[in-house]
Length: 574
Image 1: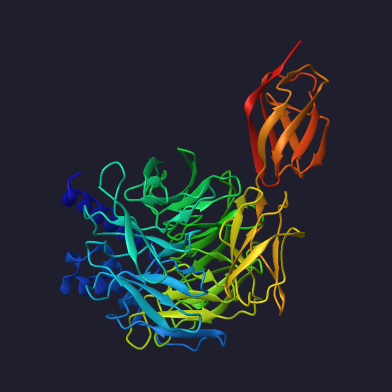
Image 2 (image 1 turned 45 degrees about the vertical axis):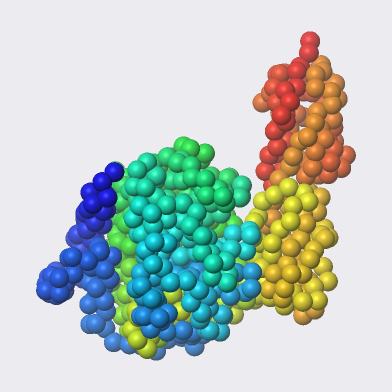
């Protein structure tokens, strides 16, 4: 693919979105004309579409005054626009490392002014780990995620071997390795969305103009399928193993979609229609009720964006519609939502609130909306990025504007949520080592999976590993000298079938399944026919009776942690 043509298409695509957004905009036509005139006068149409959009929004912010924020909000670091980087935008996800610090990126600034990777402590001490230089990539908008190896993984929108961006890993001490360079061909290019770590140990993501891919930890790239359009938010793996996400464009009205990736199959679940919102940027998060939650940047009854719930099958419900005519709650939510351990969803808007610079909010899964803090130009404004929850219970995030230099801030919000532990992976076999993030681990006396004791090793005060005990799907607890901490998610022990004895038999005969993670067996089928009688002998053995109507085929055993399929075919004899 021609590089200049590809970038021209990308620029046209984003420019089209900006124009459509203006049509649906909350601001007056007069204000828009004045501001766009300023953009043209400054020659900003020669810059990237993102630069245009940010200047447009920055101009809007000038009409508002600063406001006093809630007491629990803290500006913990001000970016200087140069050495430390500049203007963290969407989606720019931060990640908690094994050391308890947060890791993130800036799209500009640094020694080459094409972005940085930084580490910041929860109290606000920031260290630049890497300065991008085009060769290793540039404009790292996607932020970082933590790998099971303790390294951080991310993407760059531009630069790299072919100038279409790349995928990289970086150690906590700053050694960066490029894993894959996009070519602009079938693999797409210019990735914007963060990566996600799948339960199979591979990384999954999307690239422009709408490509879903898989990448192994060794850098082996696999094209999965085309998606409806470009995504800014990360893929989210549901409890069913499939991946879910939203696209900014695409769908029947070109107003965005929610889609599902299962294996290599892509299914559009919903096309946005302005009533339910339009132009979603922030991706999705799955709550304990099994539904997904997200935001749109426009549309809804107030034409200023929505917060929505959508089922895995595509039934959507609007929980909140933002309204610029009544801006006290904020409006224009670019980032996605983070699910707090208190069961609430947390997010941010870039405009509105008491001072016009946006809000930090929480919303229940039933739709009860509360403003927690109002942004201002002194302590941060323009919070495009999706926040995250640290294991200390606090909400952390980034803003693109505000602060001492006006180049954005890192912030924290203490909403009184208790500390917890986070699991580096939430699905696996018995005996698997699981990484656990938290704090105060020195002197830990026990780690339990659903009440069953596990062997563990304390690596540091903020990280330990534990081996999954027999068949115990459930909450993980860590008992430290000061308290017992609970995991934010359930660990699901996946069953495994190693053998069938015998491998053939009549209806009514007994068959022994050997394996692991079998103790909570819920259903068994033979050739697709449900077994009506079985006995769980232990975590490693289950005995069942071949049911009436059974057909020759593989045996499938299901638990709360997943399902296991026998490699051998069981033959039903006359």
